[in-house]
Length: 267
Image (tube, rainbow, N blue to C red; front, side, top):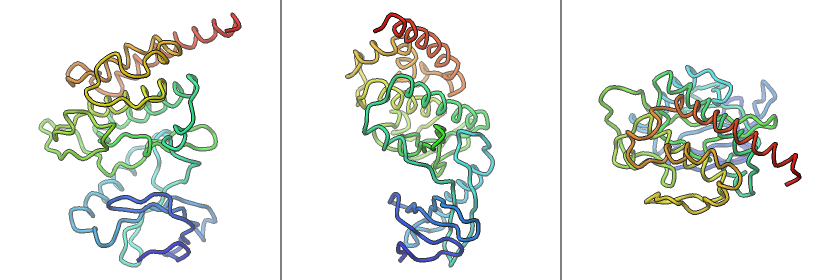
């Protein structure tokens, strides 16, 4: 049993940040480097061979994906017969931030950073499969970083997968065990819609979605991007995050011009 206050190798556990079905995340102090880290520790009673393989895949993918908007693995080790993963610690998650209203500018900034991160992963043939606000870490300098590649899968011609993911952000085909890069696109669309509208849409995702008037007032040119990302039929969505990023950036430019015109008009 792991307790707050105890030592795990060079790490002293300060508090638990999150509890999951297969691992807990702690704020810990690295007594050698003298910095705080986020320490991910799989639950010992759950760590069978299959789950250990999943965590090892997370380690390998995290080490390979080098991007400023992807949370980088600091260290991975076996400590006292436990697999321990250390990551930089942020201020809070996007989920925490969404308890308060976001401005259009902040929503667009976070959305672009998320798409940059996911586009890089997709270019490397990696699907995240669990894109959600809890896995988006915010840092003091305004950087957003995509975390937790525990469910990530290599894209192959024939994709066999479970329906793993988080309800509320999971694409319909992923819920049926058939994820693709387009499934990640759907998850981004849900997050972006929530940031711009203040509402988390739900199945069956029929337009007009709740909260659409707020999106229309704040970022009307973003609506076609959201509609394509949230198509129920995956073949109608952007093929990957890179393609969505191009459309997003074009809509962002026109949205910023609109906001500037309003500012000058004193609205």
